[in-house]
Length: 141
Image (cartoon, rainbow, N blue to C red; front, top):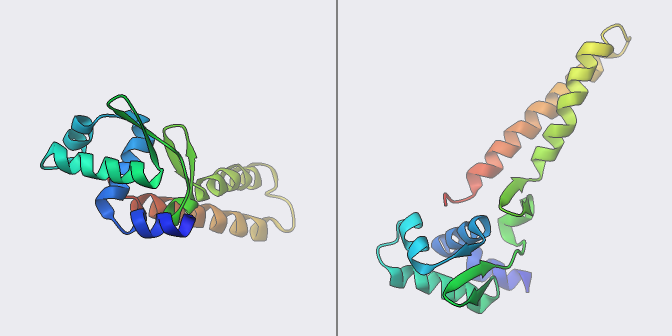
Protein backbone atom coordinates (compact mmCIF):
# COMPACT_ATOMS: atom_id res chain seq x y z
CA UNK A 1 0.00 0.00 0.00
CA UNK A 2 2.82 2.42 0.87
CA UNK A 3 4.53 1.90 -2.48
CA UNK A 4 1.20 2.63 -4.17
CA UNK A 5 0.93 5.92 -2.23
CA UNK A 6 4.45 6.89 -3.25
CA UNK A 7 3.68 6.26 -6.92
CA UNK A 8 0.31 8.02 -6.86
CA UNK A 9 1.10 11.06 -4.71
CA UNK A 10 4.81 11.68 -4.11
CA UNK A 11 5.50 11.99 -7.84
CA UNK A 12 2.64 14.46 -8.29
CA UNK A 13 3.96 17.80 -7.06
CA UNK A 14 0.64 19.66 -6.74
CA UNK A 15 -1.21 16.67 -5.29
CA UNK A 16 1.52 16.31 -2.67
CA UNK A 17 1.31 20.06 -1.93
CA UNK A 18 -2.43 19.75 -1.39
CA UNK A 19 -1.91 16.79 0.97
CA UNK A 20 0.67 18.72 3.02
CA UNK A 21 -1.65 21.73 3.11
CA UNK A 22 -4.55 19.64 4.41
CA UNK A 23 -2.26 17.97 6.98
CA UNK A 24 -1.37 21.41 8.33
CA UNK A 25 -4.88 22.90 8.20
CA UNK A 26 -6.75 19.73 9.27
CA UNK A 27 -10.03 20.78 7.59
CA UNK A 28 -10.25 22.54 4.22
CA UNK A 29 -12.67 23.41 1.46
CA UNK A 30 -12.11 23.60 -2.27
CA UNK A 31 -12.01 27.41 -2.40
CA UNK A 32 -9.52 27.60 0.48
CA UNK A 33 -7.16 25.21 -1.30
CA UNK A 34 -7.53 27.13 -4.55
CA UNK A 35 -6.86 30.48 -2.91
CA UNK A 36 -4.05 29.49 -0.53
CA UNK A 37 -2.13 27.30 -2.99
CA UNK A 38 -2.66 29.64 -5.94
CA UNK A 39 -4.53 27.28 -8.26
CA UNK A 40 -6.12 28.87 -11.30
CA UNK A 41 -9.59 27.40 -10.67
CA UNK A 42 -11.64 25.64 -8.01
CA UNK A 43 -11.95 22.71 -10.43
CA UNK A 44 -8.19 22.11 -10.26
CA UNK A 45 -8.22 22.20 -6.45
CA UNK A 46 -11.22 19.83 -6.39
CA UNK A 47 -9.40 17.45 -8.75
CA UNK A 48 -6.46 17.10 -6.35
CA UNK A 49 -8.73 16.79 -3.31
CA UNK A 50 -10.82 14.06 -4.95
CA UNK A 51 -7.68 12.25 -6.04
CA UNK A 52 -6.40 12.24 -2.45
CA UNK A 53 -9.80 11.12 -1.17
CA UNK A 54 -9.86 8.23 -3.66
CA UNK A 55 -6.39 7.12 -2.52
CA UNK A 56 -7.48 7.25 1.13
CA UNK A 57 -5.41 10.20 2.32
CA UNK A 58 -8.43 12.48 2.79
CA UNK A 59 -11.92 12.02 4.13
CA UNK A 60 -14.85 14.17 3.05
CA UNK A 61 -17.39 15.43 5.57
CA UNK A 62 -20.07 17.65 4.08
CA UNK A 63 -18.11 20.04 1.86
CA UNK A 64 -14.90 19.85 3.92
CA UNK A 65 -11.92 17.55 3.49
CA UNK A 66 -10.02 16.13 6.48
CA UNK A 67 -6.53 14.64 6.42
CA UNK A 68 -5.78 11.00 7.18
CA UNK A 69 -2.16 11.15 8.39
CA UNK A 70 0.04 8.54 6.71
CA UNK A 71 3.78 8.49 6.18
CA UNK A 72 5.13 7.55 2.78
CA UNK A 73 7.92 8.65 0.51
CA UNK A 74 9.76 11.69 1.82
CA UNK A 75 7.31 11.99 4.72
CA UNK A 76 9.11 9.05 6.37
CA UNK A 77 11.81 11.58 7.30
CA UNK A 78 9.27 13.60 9.27
CA UNK A 79 7.15 13.23 12.37
CA UNK A 80 3.58 14.46 11.93
CA UNK A 81 2.25 15.93 15.18
CA UNK A 82 -1.14 17.59 14.85
CA UNK A 83 -0.46 20.55 12.51
CA UNK A 84 3.31 20.26 12.76
CA UNK A 85 5.50 18.41 10.29
CA UNK A 86 8.88 18.09 12.00
CA UNK A 87 12.04 16.52 10.54
CA UNK A 88 13.18 13.62 12.72
CA UNK A 89 16.70 15.07 12.69
CA UNK A 90 15.40 18.00 14.74
CA UNK A 91 15.28 15.68 17.76
CA UNK A 92 18.97 14.88 17.28
CA UNK A 93 19.62 18.63 17.32
CA UNK A 94 17.68 18.86 20.60
CA UNK A 95 19.85 16.03 21.98
CA UNK A 96 23.20 17.52 20.89
CA UNK A 97 22.45 21.11 21.98
CA UNK A 98 22.39 20.53 25.77
CA UNK A 99 25.20 18.00 25.44
CA UNK A 100 27.44 20.62 23.78
CA UNK A 101 26.48 23.30 26.29
CA UNK A 102 27.04 20.85 29.15
CA UNK A 103 30.53 19.98 27.94
CA UNK A 104 31.39 23.67 27.69
CA UNK A 105 30.02 24.55 31.13
CA UNK A 106 30.83 21.56 33.31
CA UNK A 107 33.54 19.39 31.81
CA UNK A 108 36.18 21.81 30.57
CA UNK A 109 38.77 20.35 32.99
CA UNK A 110 38.13 16.73 32.00
CA UNK A 111 41.03 15.06 30.10
CA UNK A 112 38.78 14.06 27.19
CA UNK A 113 37.06 17.45 26.99
CA UNK A 114 38.27 18.37 23.49
CA UNK A 115 37.27 15.03 21.98
CA UNK A 116 33.81 15.10 23.56
CA UNK A 117 33.31 18.73 22.56
CA UNK A 118 34.33 18.12 18.95
CA UNK A 119 32.02 15.10 18.65
CA UNK A 120 29.07 16.97 20.17
CA UNK A 121 29.65 20.08 18.02
CA UNK A 122 29.86 17.94 14.86
CA UNK A 123 26.61 16.20 15.86
CA UNK A 124 24.97 19.56 16.57
CA UNK A 125 26.03 21.11 13.27
CA UNK A 126 25.12 18.05 11.17
CA UNK A 127 21.72 17.62 12.80
CA UNK A 128 20.92 21.31 12.24
CA UNK A 129 22.14 21.12 8.64
CA UNK A 130 20.01 18.05 7.85
CA UNK A 131 16.98 19.52 9.63
CA UNK A 132 17.15 22.60 7.40
CA UNK A 133 17.72 20.47 4.28
CA UNK A 134 14.71 18.27 5.07
CA UNK A 135 12.50 21.34 5.50
CA UNK A 136 13.64 22.50 2.06
CA UNK A 137 12.57 19.17 0.52
CA UNK A 138 8.91 19.82 1.30
CA UNK A 139 6.95 21.82 -1.25
CA UNK A 140 5.73 25.21 -0.09
CA UNK A 141 2.13 25.17 1.13
